[in-house]
Length: 351
Ligand SMILES: O=P(O)(O)OC[C@H]1O[C@](O)(COP(=O)(O)O)[C@@H](O)[C@@H]1O
Ligand SMILES: [Mg+2]
Ligand SMILES: [Mg+2]
Image 1 (cartoon, rainbow, N blue to C red):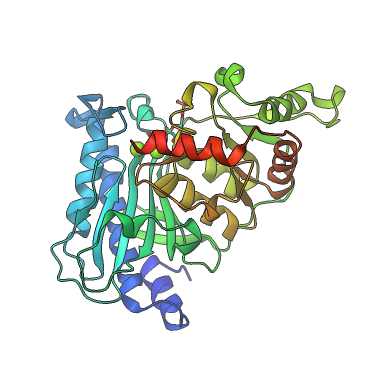
Image 2 (tube, rainbow, N blue to C red; image 1 turned 135 degrees about the horizontal axis):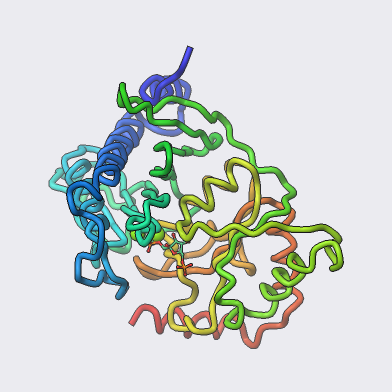
């Protein structure tokens, strides 16, 4: 007998003494928003919603029409949820407080409404990434500072992938579970319980067009993979890059591999490309819950203390042995005054 998302949530909820029912209701609501976004992506070529919206977002990146539509669907679908105090999105400069009266035990929702949105116009996979945190201030209106919690504080992380099939993958800290949308019934059906990333892999994912901008540990790692059976790794590797983090991470959850978006010499002021709070943190929790690892090369992603809502970070995640190897390569390189360099870089990002 198949288990759908509602049944799964009811069962989890009944056996969970860590989280209240309200959290599971919120997760279900976010899943329904993802279902609406899947439908919007599905019909985009038919109704003229592919292409650029002609404006930039807060990150200075071009917004696609579907970035805005996906953001609106998430906002509209969650605004009235009583368990939600405030929302932060890649597409919004500031946080948005919900219309709910502030009560104790509410949550904060963070999301990247459409990840990999440049794939929309070529009918390649895109997705939605989300993260849920407890709101620390019980009575006062939620503030941006409330969102600046390390990823280890997340109570739920997940993504939806809009590919040949729509899937929802989520964790509340007890394994990573995948559901497939059955289009006729509109139900998410549990198809991938307790996903598990193999510790070893021979597949890596990185945008090699940026090779000349990487730091030496990443150059070394990729060169060794590319050297194949003739190199120090003595085995051939395969390379994949979908240019949508959801799709690359999804592949890793299903068959292993390692995904890298490292620090880039061109991006000193941005300290990596991917956003910590609504890309790197949720993906890191999902990967760790599936037995993998996630690191900046220097530290566990989930232990980074955020200082800004749209902060960026280097990310290396996936099969444990490969991420450990990457960390070792980074630890062998002496960085000049690393703390001072990081502090200056962070200040630059913030102002
Ligand atoms: O185009 P690049 O530099 O290869 O970057 C691809 C990366 O950028 C992202 O598309 C960023 O996500 P957004 O589309 O949400 O901005 C990741 O999903 C992906 O891994
Ligand atoms: Mg993204
Ligand atoms: Mg996006």
